Image (cartoon, rainbow, N blue to C red; front, top):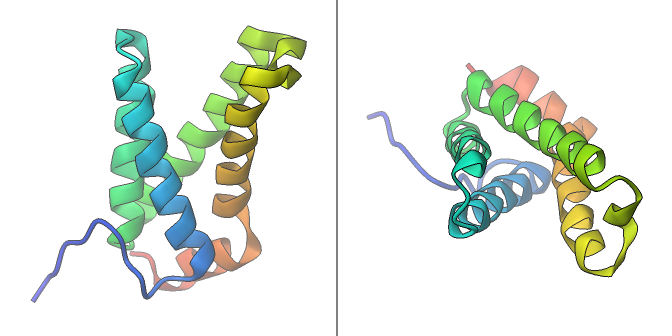
Length: 114
């Protein structure tokens, strides 16, 4: 039986945390109400779903969306990204990239993802 899931608790903690952060980030982007951010929200949401179901495309999509989002934040806000309200969001964005690119996450997806 092919079971679909939104979170796979049998994956390493780094991937489970990254999956949850992707979903949370996607929800907040949708709630922002800005149409141009829906592409990032969809990429993070589908990427998280793909990671939970151990698909390589999901991992690749989540990594690409997370890294691109960090680059957009730095490009748009420049040094203001280190000011108080934005730095909290920026820390979570960096944490998401770090969780996705952690050696444990990369090794697991190389071995088990199809």
